[in-house]
Length: 147
Image (tube, rainbow, N blue to C red; front, side, top):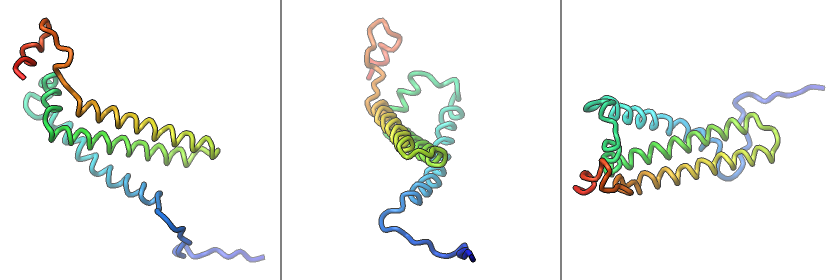
């Protein structure tokens, strides 16, 4: 009995439809590069510019989240990081979980958690109001009255 092994460069039979594994692989590479730029930009602005780490307080965060540029920056960082992490967890689950039902349940749970965090994080960035709940005896009263 003779076994024939195909050459390593033999084209595989391709199924019709989208190649989701390739799309996930590409997403991980592209989002990883973008995330490096976003994260180091975030760290540089928060820790190095101006007074550095000593400037980080409630007013600094409120000022950043009031600026549309920083809202988009933070949302992009949030969405890319959560989807990147969820896709990485999906890959790990697919590699190590053998039961089909357990694997599907875990992948669903990872993407449900990522989706929930994306929704909540987006709401925080766009609905953030530093003066919500500030009373006259608060240290922020004068600042909020000026707005």
